[in-house]
Amino acid sequence: MFDHEAEAKQRWGETAEYAESTSRTSKYSTSDFQAAKVDQEAATELFVYAFGNSLPINSAKAQETVAAHRAAITKWFYNCSVEMQKQLALMYIQDSRFKEYYDGRVRGLAQYVHDAIQAQ
Image 1 (cartoon, helix red, strand yellow):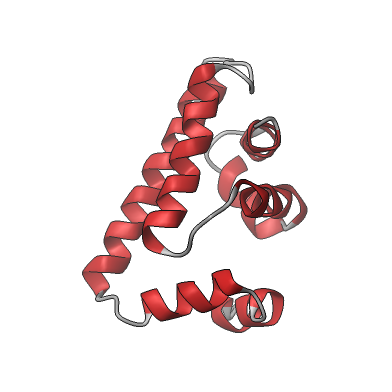
Image 2 (cartoon, rainbow, N blue to C red; image 1 turned 30 degrees about the vertical axis):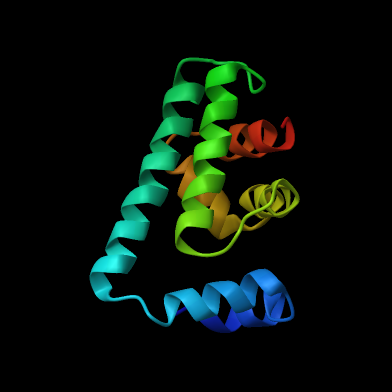
């Protein structure tokens, strides 16, 4: 089984975002983690809607979706800056696990999410 925690520590362990996320999530209950997942899934569904309706990546609705994605991360994990979100977007197309998550919803969604985030 893939160890997300070890990889996150290796990749981001020296960052303020990692420290903040670790501090915050160490206090979370199972229901907190479930609520965080619901918020993340809701943001993903907004991307599904925008992509499925062929909204341009720089349209107001697509950019509201980008903001909702960033807000969900900030709410539950760490203050997600635009620059950090752009780094995450690169992972969404470069890391097969993230790409499969998005493209498992709708083929081509990972690239759309990346492009919309990069367009802000």
